[in-house]
Amino acid sequence: MGPVYARMRQYGHNRDGNTKTCLVDALTPFEDDIILDIGTGPGMYAMDIATAAPSCRVVGIDISETFIDIAKESASSAKISNVEFALGNIESLGFADNHFSKIICAGVISVVHQRKQAINELARVLRPGGTLAVREPCRSTGAFSRFVFGLPSESRIRGLCTNAGLLGGHFSPGFMSKAEIEDLFSETAFSSVELEEHGRDILITATR
Ligand SMILES: C[S@@+](CC[C@H](N)C(=O)[O-])C[C@H]1O[C@@H](n2cnc3c(N)ncnc32)[C@H](O)[C@@H]1O
Image (cartoon, rainbow, N blue to C red; front, side, top):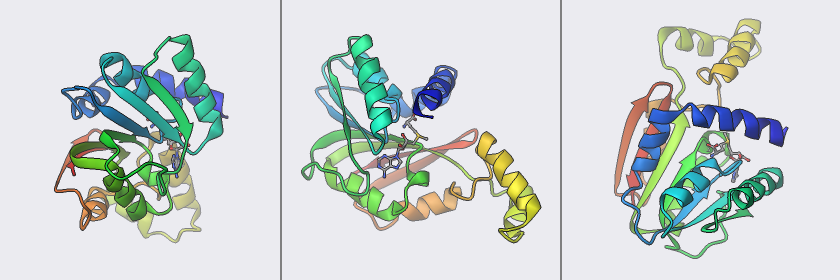
């Protein structure tokens, strides 16, 4: 599945101009930064940033060994030398406090079990004054979505909508609403948190 997902994700990533640019722009200007791409998957954001910012060091971390192998292979083929990839878990990162100056986190928090723990862990490894840029698919709170989520979880209609929504990324029960994302960032070490809707995604820029 890993290689198939990597190809599909690469296709989506290439077509994803505006949102992708906004997410990466939230971390600019790049100086001599050390940047974490947490939940890097096939490593596309990590490699984009490493290419755009040759004076920076980029570290891509993922819980999946398959993705880390794919990312390492891609960086090696593209001869990108200022990026490295390693296994790790967002809920418990093996880095010292204040290790990174910037962090990018795309599509990860909604698939993690201990979400608050993950946010606190990102705050721990980010230097004071550092920036976190997050991209999350945003669950719809429209009338249809409220109707679907009002149905019993075993309901056939809800199952069909959820499955269809998983493809479109709108009705997945794992995805958070804007209010849930805001709540997740409350009472954390981040001093300023800005949320911006981009189509079905939400971009969060937070300063430590
Ligand atoms: C939807 S993919 C996004 C991949 C990449 N950020 C992108 O935008 O192409 C979610 C990624 O999070 C990783 N992941 C899931 N749980 C994780 C955890 N606890 N710690 C680190 N990575 C995790 C998955 O292996 C997967 O690569």
